Image (cartoon, rainbow, N blue to C red; front, side):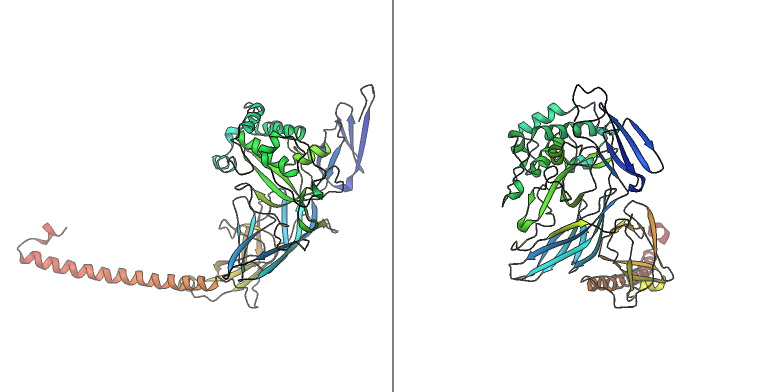
Length: 494
């Protein structure tokens, strides 16, 4: 901090070149003087805010994780239950799973981009799932002046992400009143969202004792706007989402783990049983920048700008947009609460810029006669590398981590195409694994459908041939009958 009476004031910050390229610097320095060994940044009194200087350098930050999930079935029948695994977020987060044990029955990606794994739980039994791996986090900084217009937001996003939900009471009069006062139609989406962020960070008060409580009740946006606090991170997030949605700006919630060394400045406040602490933050959609993550809680407690930039310490476990209550993040799937389920720490080897792809490819029995005639082979592909692959084999489909799929290729082809986490096209040259293939429980269904489809095709061909013969016979009989009546076949045949 500087005194008003200070006349001459200058700060020079020297950052070693080996720290890597700049991700962000806040506030904007008055001068940049790169040398052979340092990035030199100069700040004047006018440039500095009371929160000081924050800067981040490097290409990415890698964390290792081990997450536990417990599922219990109290019924007398087998049931299918789901868990949300940490997802990929384009340009921000890429996850690599080294192990998911046991492997799920099936995988799918929901509308919010979550990796949803479905498990079959036997009657009257409990299963424990362990997911281990690494996550690569990247940072960026946006300029609010370059945001898009509200009218340019895609209609489907406005429809899905501006709805009222249980904790986002956008139709409530107090929410509407604040949103109307903050909204400036002539400003960009980012500038309007920044007005909401500033309102939330300056109005609400944080409860620093919340992490010591046995149970934290979620109160929602309406309670937060009526009473300034003290609140946990959930209310900061809920209020930001409700106000931006009330403006017509798509917004949603992100739950996960935020790495912090100074809990008095950057606290974790979703307290789960047995010491698992999570954090909640928000994101909004801008037509020029896409989904932008912000943290109004840490903006309030630290005084640091967590709007135009988010650090490389926010690891998303789940995203809630279609529903304010689902899916639950890792750490929430507890049966008796005796086990610690969330372990995250900085990786010792932090020099990877991307995770490698590894696919196991197995031959299957060629039961489809169409493949036999066209000289094609169907393969089972297991995504053993544990990273999400998009537009897999140019089909538009996704192959999620530790999942399997079936592909049909020409018999002499050994290349599979896909898009990586950055959207870049890649190809993978494979060799056939001669071991026993990994078979999903849906294998027999696929076999039955293949055989059934072949039989149906044969029946259609038979019907067309025999039907054609029936038409010829009918034509012959009709001609004879018309001639017997003394009529020319060409007059009446049509």
